[in-house]
Figure (spheres, rainbow, N blue to C red):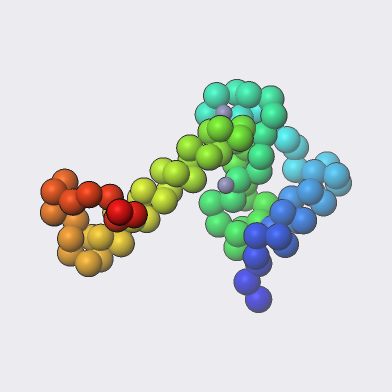
Length: 88
Ligand SMILES: [Zn+2]
Ligand SMILES: [Zn+2]
């Protein structure tokens, strides 16, 4: 069964408590207060430590990337520069 976000978080906090996973400073800017970011919830202990602002920026970048590959799939990527953002 696939592991969801919540399960992944539970596994992470259990591992931190057990000492198998050690909290580290932000991988981008070195800030001491961090979130555990998952690139893939299917690998629940494969995480990146990111502070709240780097974490948010990282997710924004992922969203951008997903949108771009979505457009590539639709064959619209070449026209991307001529278009307004999709939200509008
Ligand atoms: Zn940071
Ligand atoms: Zn994240």
